[in-house]
Image 1: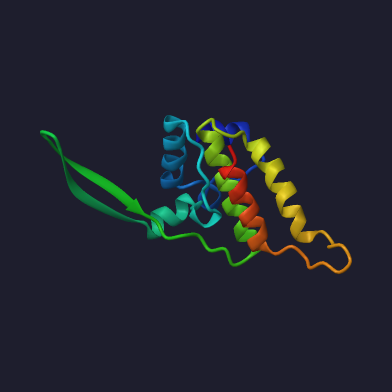
Image 2: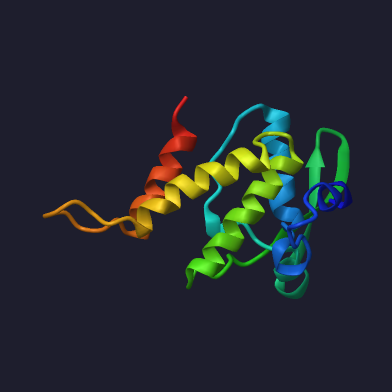
Length: 146
């Protein structure tokens, strides 16, 4: 993360701007499995939220002849009440994908800019404006295309 802070000096990658370890683990698992999966914006939690409200569960796990303790962290979903909160979630997702070397931060930001532009563009005559649910559905479809 320090390397990314040095590379992206104009970005605030601390507190609410820093991706949670849970999010980083998820994208790194995608890198290892070589399968890109959609991560909903509300699941793109911050390190700050993870530290302050995250809960850790420890469970015993028995594999063949090995007994181990597996720790899982549960972090509540991020608030999506405003466009500001949404943009923070999407920025954390971009940073996480950059961290895992799956999608460059720049490519993700350009993609999200084009996608979110539809929320502020004027609809053609006799058509309704784009709503956030449509943008999220389009975002999800991009990740499901092969």
